[in-house]
Length: 418
Image 1 (cartoon, rainbow, N blue to C red):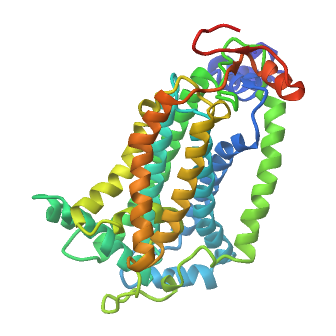
Image 2 (cartoon, rainbow, N blue to C red):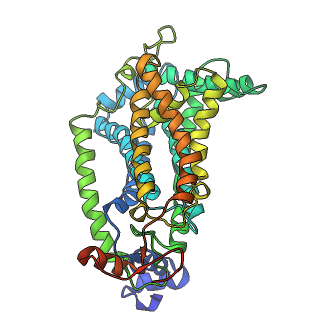
């Protein structure tokens, strides 16, 4: 659409000089989208909406927060008790962190199930993993700000992990803390980084969207639709679908905010930070527990930190570790079984990460950590080479007809024939 086609003269005047409305019309209205996307594709837009909510509530909280050792905890209490609707703003922000991670994890597993990381979308996947890393850093810095018991000791334990790095480890810890212990300098640094990183996430998300629109969305069948008639304009078909998903998502979000706001928070964090009293068990929030479980499962500090870092870095290599020419797990029966084993393994690591590192839970955590790396480094490449995938349909329409009546044209990926 050219600027002359907009009915509003002001919009036409602006668009002629800066074609922003033409750009938005093309990317959000005319953008050709595969016609068979299911509701799992909603979670990308849901994550973006939660990110906006988190930034808005974070800015409002920052207006009343005091990043000092003696004032941080009291400023949070002031927000909760004295600021108009401060309790609501804070609970939306704290609950939003969990909702953000939940949406992103589902989004990642959906991409993994349907092969959204395969060529030519490798960079799209890698930027998604980078967003996850930035989210984890932002969440950690935010976890320290209420300055409760778990905030203080979490900051102490996590920063001290860097001391495991040979030669330069102690210097890195001192630099991170701004001194030789957790104090005002530490809190000020973490507060500044927690405020800054969400805007870095927004920048990477925009690049993520540019990469997505370069080759278009993947679809449940994993069929290329670049020059296919099996697409529809993004609006109104998927805007309506996204709005329905958003309504359901906000119901769940609102239930936690208004009825169970503390269910996703650690009760030890409602106790002021006390350097002289160590909590019985120091654990991060639930969305970091799988990686924390991998850290705890290895008794050697350096190896544990290395394994935790490797558990994230291995995700960047997934597009090259999966050697199968087929994208979607719909046509990969063996891969589909191992995918659900991986999901179960991640759930196990989450539970084990919240338990003391002893007895049965320590054993299960170690088994879960071993399988996690085994899946990516051994199972994924071997399944890609040895699996005999099902024949692919030639188009989305053929796939729908095939499921409807058991017929339809199919294509053998090994010969390219129909």
